Length: 414
Image (cartoon, rainbow, N blue to C red; front, top):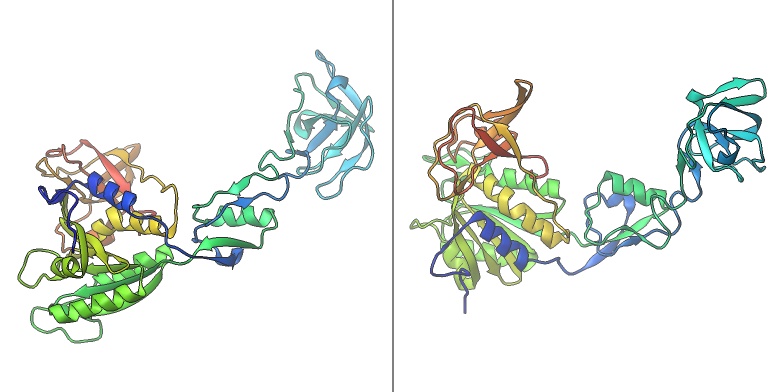
């Protein structure tokens, strides 16, 4: 028996309710693999990485300067100390800093035995074989203690962490050559519609070239998932059903564009309900109101609208975080909003959340946003010219020029 929306009495969900439903429903895919750290960028750790030793491994100097014993320093005047050697990074001083002695140290050098304070070279002066230290020093200054960054036996990176460039450097600093990560998420995607033509074919009457598959291909490639491009499927129930069954048999997630509204040729939702289940399919959002979410077989299915901008809004607000959850990312990174003045007036009725496309730019001593061209849901140029969404929540009405609005940057979404 097919299942439907969590609240059948009201088939429309708010953005917040839809996101909550997605993120509480979905969990990481089963399966993991070991990969070399050079191949781990963008992958998600399935188990924590434990530090095999302290980082740094020894107390070391944070600055170029002189290693001294704090107890030798005068509290109210200069102190002259005898230089007895030099400690370099990678070449420790072999002796002991005794009373009245100082050792020249370089940044990263192991702190010489017997010393407990580093005096930066800029405040000292050298007089022959002595270094003169001014008053006002503090015990333990300019030292990096062993284990200060990471303590041996403690997690260096937690399970659920999506590995970035800094994480790779951290792993290398620990001598870790391989990590255990969740297997790659496998995502099949397709476009539906008789009006959709593939690039390379001539356009027939009333046809348009398929931009949605290329938009999704780019966005999914940036996410690092394994892609299955199912091409364009005509508006015939038998063809769409075959594509759905094929995609669901080979992928964890199926993403479609088009065919989720209520037109005579919109078959996606009906087929989802017959072959599996529909969790929801209408949202209080503009653009992107018709967006279906459910299952076919073992695959999750996202039925996105057909209009190009609506596809990108739906992907950014719902699909990308759902995919990250399936990839094993935990916790999900928050999507920050920033408050800036808006140059343009925007007409809006309260009741739904809207996502006009904006261009954030520096001006007037700060940052401002302006509308990025024609805001129609079929005008993909507005996305190409934009670098952010203007986020107008459900309670918001008309925006006057100069009003402060919330924006969400595209970075991290596409």
